[in-house]
Image (cartoon, rainbow, N blue to C red; front, top):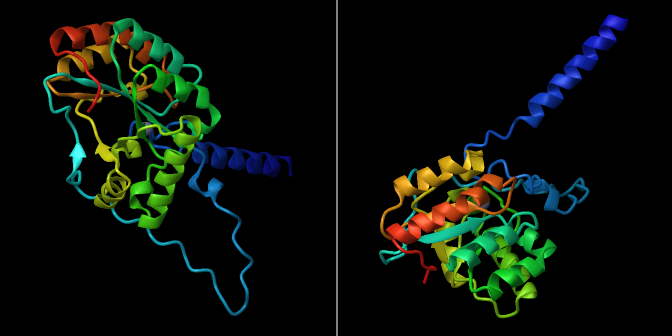
Length: 262
Ligand SMILES: [Zn+2]
């Protein structure tokens, strides 16, 4: 009996462990701890009546094999641009802003709606210091671009509304799809909402926690004139990104020049 109980306990533990490791982490932000499961935001389902059944959720549309048309992937000039995703974050965003100020450069912050709601003061500081804003979805939904167009639109509108609650009349000229998992549909919705879809040229994969030296080396090696560099100021421990900033920015300034996106 004792043996059986122990076995049941171990099986339960194994199930828990497997369930906890389901997040493969193949994309920059797949492991972002701030994203609750998509179902968390949904209202409770109505009780089904015998005469009417609840329609099933529409299937996700497939991701295209290659990136859709219409993405901004370069600056359009010789200078390179810095982008910081997944904030604002109280631990890292202020320090990133300090680095940018010290280097006298501006960047684009791709902000998540739920983070803006929690930290509106940080968003105000981003704008006050001359940086640009980019909508990065309400809750970092990696599958947002695959959902029905009405859901995509509602998510982007809600995020912009939260941004403008923190900074009335804030300009949000860009949208960036979480994980870079774009579809033609999300690009179209963003355009209808006056946002250009911002991808990137250089991804040093700082989300995968390389050392600061590796982040800096990867950016230096891959940056070409006009590059858009993807970095993160939120979604996890960004100590290495922060530590890389000073040298990385100085190198980019020297080699190409750094400018905000226009
Ligand atoms: Zn992201």
